[in-house]
Image (cartoon, rainbow, N blue to C red; front, side, top):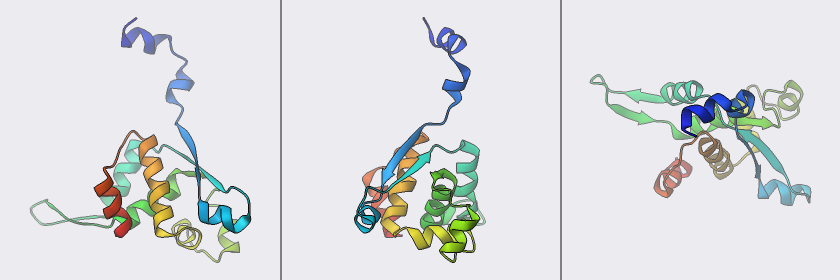
Length: 139
C-alpha cells in the first residue's frame, strides 16, 4: 500500500490529532514531594511561524538582525502547554500574573521554559541541535 492509499484509509481524526507529551518539572516535583508534570502538545505551524516572526527584528535589507529567543520560548510554552491552562483566570490571579506570559515567568525557571518549549518543538517535528538549545537557554 502506498502513502496515498494509507492516507485515504486512515482515521482522519487520528491523523489530524496533535501529539501530546508529559514533561516533568523536577524542581516542582521536589517542592510538592510528588511528581509534577505539565502536558504539552504540538502547535499549528502557522502559530509557530507567527510567534517567531513577532519576536524577530530584520534589517532594512531583510536580513535577520535580532531574535528574542526567550520571548519565543515563552510564547511556545503558552500556546503548547495544555495542562495546566496558563490562560486560567484563577491560576493567573493566584500568582498575581497579568498575562499568561507573565505566569510563565512566575512558575518556571529559564531552563524549564527551554525544556518545555523544546518538547513542544519536537512534537511539531522540529529538532534543535544542542548548540541551539544552549543558545536558547543562555538568552
